Image (cartoon, rainbow, N blue to C red):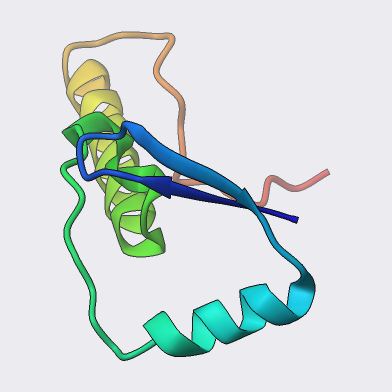
Length: 89
């Protein structure tokens, strides 16, 4: 198993080989409840936390629904009709 250490800027600081026992001991040592913020571009945030993914999905859904409503009000015949979710067969 390999252990990689990076700086906050993303530079590789070291690459070590370790056994499972060494890795478990390392995790126990550093798992003291501390967290740090690593600067991330805004468009990558949905990959960092499920909360951001749900916010993005909800925003996209609302945007599509508003765009469709606007298209219908302007007489667009290609607008999707979501009002009949269960059409009779």
